[in-house]
Image 1: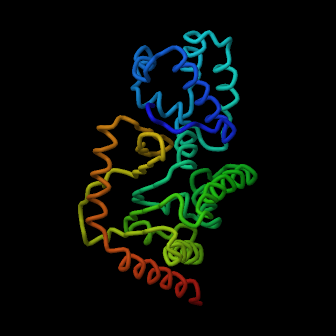
Image 2 (image 1 turned 90 degrees about the horizontal axis):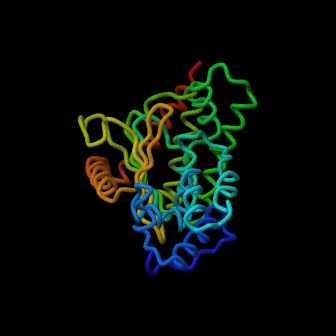
Image 3 (image 1 turned 30 degrees about the horizontal axis):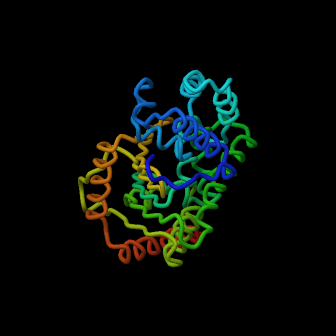
Length: 280
């Protein structure tokens, strides 16, 4: 990636692999596009590997070892990176999320994982896995709450979330859990840590009726889009596709209530759940 800032190989295993890949490529006098062409990947994808934004896959590692005669260096270290606390379809997206500078997301049915409370996450995972042992559920909850640690920084990453009103109205875990969950989101908004907008039911059709969307921007790598479905996810780096999904997100923001009106709705629905819980 021409002009990219020097990497800190100690910051993460992926950054270490990326730094070595960049070193080997430059030594071989190859461009990112030239290195990626035999793998049928773009130069920007190679740049994302070099920056540590994307996880190196075993088949790529083997090719790099063969190309640069590195005696299995990439394959050995790639194997060590395969272990993840996240489901396979989400692991790479979670790793990218942790180093993003901007996260923009649309959630049609559930409060996004970054914003969930423990009680809400427990209800979601138990619904997904009704016969799972309790230890397995607790591990998933712990991993989800750990992701939210990135919000402890006062300003980075910038998080902008658009919620469908269905997220507010579906009583995941019951009234008490929903009241707590919505108040948690509202507190993050009032602390000016995140921006939230809600698309009300009255708007009817909108640009993303068919699924969730996450857009991630990075300091020194191209943007990514992540599309998620039932037990499946697709991380996209093609610039044209990312641009198309960025337009979708812009249309969603334009359709949604203002941040001020959205906060009022969040807090109002939270109060409704709280009052429902208090009924005899």
